[in-house]
Structures are given as structure tokens and as C-alpha cells.
Length: 264
Image 1 (cartoon, rainbow, N blue to C red):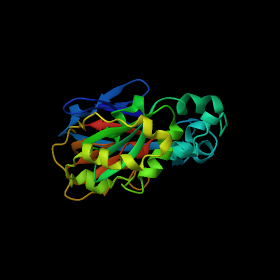
Image 2 (image 1 turned 120 degrees about the vertical axis):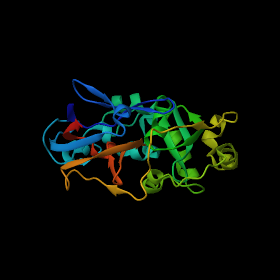
Image 3 (image 1 turned 90 degrees about the horizontal axis):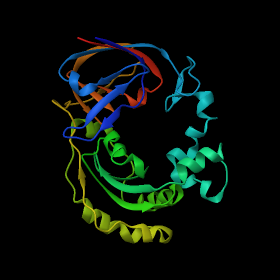
Image 4 (image 1 turned 180 degrees about the horizontal axis):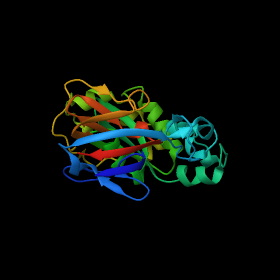
């Protein structure tokens, strides 16, 4: 069985375990169904997710030209505190920025390797937590725009981390935490503008990933260096495929790579 197309972030469906899908132009693959089977990945070419041309991928699935021009790759994507649509100020495309920035956003705590604070649109819960490989998470603030979420995240970063240690996440070196206690402990540090949006009465969400075997150490697959790879799929966590030989493949980190996938 063979699939061919440009890699994009795997789509997910909440469940026990979470269901993963690789979606191509004319087909899709439920990745859970190929656990414990041999998967062969062959890199064919680059295909920028914006212009569609065969140019080296720079970041986020885009070629360098598109990355610095399109509104979907503005600095406010990675740094929400730089959002300006609420002020009616344009970065690259005000209409696009209003559509994305001026909607409910969640500031959350997630535990994937250690506790981290993060921001996502409300519509992306729990997808964002799944993508980060968090086994537990909780919303702490729901605000009406991305800017307020961003300044809240910046304030809380002084008291809790904001990065995921992907190696610890993939080897499952994680410790359960009481996120309700953490939420309440962090409340005093939420900026005054966002205090009224604090969520005081929710509970943790627990996530169950489809993993048969965690790697003892991780070796990352880079398609530019290793364009052809074959291994037995043992798990899916975050946006990573985990193979029996300790190789891990970041599907989201390889967006814009056109590949063929063969299942043996």
C-alpha cells in the first residue's frame, strides 16, 4: 500500500487512544492502523505550503520568500504578545490578522516533559495539547483576543517554563502534576487586564497516546540528510512517529516535504 503527497501536520481526533490521520490531496491514512507495521518514507521534493513551488523549506512548511511575506507566518504567530489587530493596526494583512487574532484564546498549562504555559485559539483545544505530546493539561485563562493571551503568557513565563523538552516527552520521562494547584498558584501573576478572565472551576484533561513502545533514546530522522528510511512503527506522540530502532520522525517539522509512504 502506498501514499504520496506533501506532508502537513497530522490531524487528530480525541479518543482513548487519540486517533492520528495523515491527509493528502486525494487520500488519507489513519496512522493508528499501521502500528507495528513496516513504514518506508521516501523524500521526493520540496513543496512550499504557500506557493507550491519546489523550493527549500525555510520554516513552518514555507519557503524563505513566503515565510517573510505571507500573513500566516507573521511574528505574532510565535509571539502572541505582538498581536495588534485589536488596535486596528496591520502587520501584513489586517483582514487576516483580525480573523485569527480577534477570537477567543486560551492560556493553558500542559505537562509533556515538565509543566509549561502556552497559548492557543479556543477552537484548537485539545488539538494543541495533543500536538505537544502533553499527557495532561488545563485551561487557566480564556480571553477575547490573542494580545491578552500573549501578555498573560509572557507574565507567567517568569514562574513556569514555556518550552517542551521533546526528548523527554518521547521517552515518556514524565511526572504527573496537580495542574489545579499550579493554576491557582499562578493566578496572582496574571496581568490586571486579564484577571477577570481567570478560569477557577475546571479540571485537568488527560490524553492517551497510541504508543506500543517508547524509545530508550531518540534519534531524529532528517529527510534532507536521510531521504530514504524504513522502520517498524511503534507509536505516535505529539506530532512524532516513533520507530522500533529509536528513530523518531517529526511530521509537523517536515511540513512542505513531498514524500511517498509505503506500508509493508
